[in-house]
Length: 143
Image 1: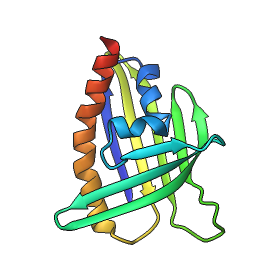
Image 2: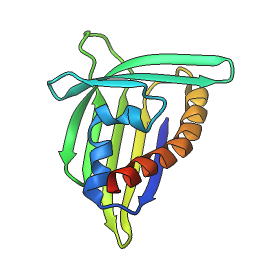
Image 3: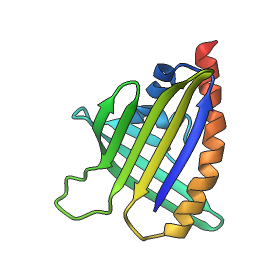
């Protein structure tokens, strides 16, 4: 599953980038991430939670930042340390300047098949809600 979302924001790229380059900040604007905590070694433990009708699903992922070119690009990849094979999760965000602020593009790749259609629908709904929350946080910070 591959999902891409974009957002144009009336804020400079470095301000927008700060919200996507650090997984600790995701719970403030992305409801499906109720908690994320830095491990101190360039990785984070990220808890995902989603509900679609009567179905609920929770998941903990260990994500490592594998690319950082501030304030332009950041990439996180699943990096479990238990010796088992796990489905890939890759989250990449790019931020670029626009005449009115910046353009954010986020791409999520999930290499598994479990709950694929449910996850895709949940993400679609969450992306639309999260755009408004992120814009509100950016506006508060600018004020």
